[in-house]
Amino acid sequence: MLIALLLSVFSFHSIHISYGKIDVGANNIHVKVSYYKDDYLKAVSNWYSVSTEFFSEKQTREAELHYFNEYFRLWTAAGFTHQLQIASSKVTEDGTSIIFEVEYSSEVPITMLTIDHRVIHKEYSDQSNIMTVHIFGADHNVISSSTKPTTTLRQ
Image 1 (tube, helix red, strand yellow):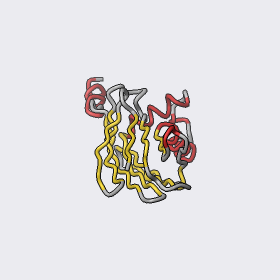
Image 2 (cartoon, rainbow, N blue to C red):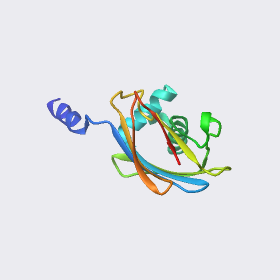
Image 3 (cartoon, rainbow, N blue to C red):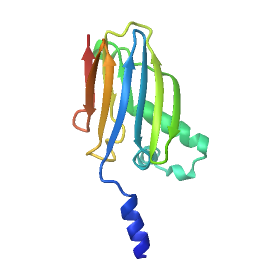
Image 4 (cartoon, one colour):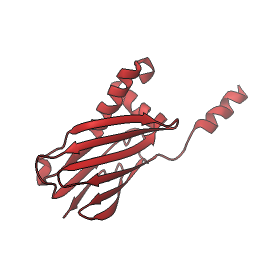
């Protein structure tokens, strides 16, 4: 029993953070972001009200991407009038993290970008999502949190 307790302590991480990069072109956006796998799967399980342990691998991937699409959203026009949809995606893991690479395309030229990044905020109020955003020829560091999940960058 002591060994099980010690193992659970060592597998626990007290920091809740994600890192990512967004590259914005004239009509396309490339996003690469990673989350701690255990935190992300907890969020997906809570969202579906069932543990992902009961899902097939295909169902887990679909649920992970569906959750991402709901809680990581982008708009390219004022007033939230032009929400972007995922054009292509790739989900990988490296043991402790789950990594999303997602492409978006815009029918209109991108002259502003609103990022709404609420992934894992419901499960962990101290979750911080840190992104480097390359847009309009400059890099911007964006941090979203449960108290400030949305940022807008303009030309």
